Amino acid sequence: MPSTNNGRQPARGRGPNRRTTAHIGLRRATDSPTVESDDRRGWNEIASSAAVILAGVIVVVGFGFIASRVIGSNNDNPLPDPPPTAALGGGVEFPSASPGLIPLGSPTPSPTTTAPPPPPKSPPATTRKTDRPPDNGAIAISTGGVPGTVDLTAEGTRDWVHWAEEGTFSLERDKDGGFAILEGTPSAPRFRHALSPSLFKWTGGDPVDHSDGTTTGIRTCGAGNGFTISAPAATSNRTLRLYVGVLAAKGKLSASLTAGSATASATLEQRGGTFDAAVFTLTYRAPKAAKINLSWTTTQAFGNGCGGVALEAATLR
Image (cartoon, rainbow, N blue to C red; front, side, top):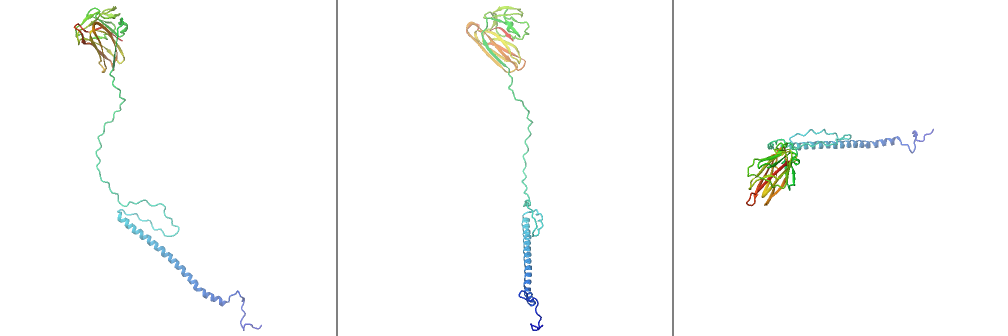
């Protein structure tokens, strides 16, 4: 076959899209500097990142060292060792809570003060019940007119007495009364009278057994003169009636208890020459078993005659 390329072999696969061997070799020779440039750039970037990281670590360590020196100069107590520096990089988790505050100095001791001595202990308070006012007893006196007839036996269920049925110094009394009503020792002029407007009667008496009615009694003359009487007192109410009279005088009845401090008084006055009679009713009690003491005294005598007080009978119930 005749040669068409001046003795050269025809190129295989030659066409517009095929590069020749010489062309390929030229391209590779041309691409080599580009590859070398890319490798160098990668190493430069790694070195720069490492330098930045190293610089950050140095700054953190240096700041921590300076801060520890500053705090240590102001605080005698050494700070606890700082936690190890964590590597800068991904995947490191830092604690979310801050450590407690560290005191910057030793506490200043409080000045020593001497406490005052405790006050002396008071004795324990005594438990008191509600205080009640003291019982002084009680005495009440009322004054009234005398009835036409007085039955001493019916009225004096505890005791009764009558004066002067048989004489100036005679005393008729309930033989079962137990001498509850007593007259004190006479100490003044004493006269028998029959001036009472009332009739006094009784049964079961001593030394006179009974009487259908008598107007007799005793009296005295002059200021300061009178009579004294006593009777039992108890915590329950008692009633004592005293039949009295005045003639040209002013008389005063005073009553007091031998237990307790209750007192009472009443007066009776008659300025003319006629006899004036009355009955004093005493209601009384004592804080405990005691006696009631009475004095019936002439406080003032009128005129030139024998003015004074009189006494006829007494009953107790």
